[in-house]
Image (cartoon, rainbow, N blue to C red; front, side):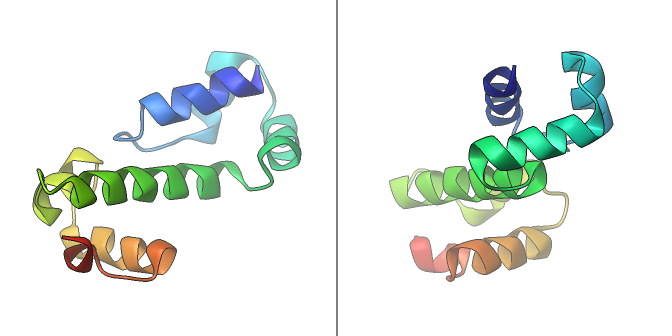
Length: 99
């Protein structure tokens, strides 16, 4: 079940994540999801989600086919400065440096 949840998160990276929605959809309690996810993945659900988004952003930017604006909006960010801030926090460089 946790693998299905992980896969669901990866498929829906452009959407905001909700623990309540995940637990309802997959029939698991919030506390069990948090505990089991941490044990299996060694990070919280939100950390996994954020890092997966930034990994995808990095791949897209590195390809040279997308602008920072396109990647940020495609991954569900409404505010590009928030996207850039999170990218730099996770990756250690700004999105424009990848291009």
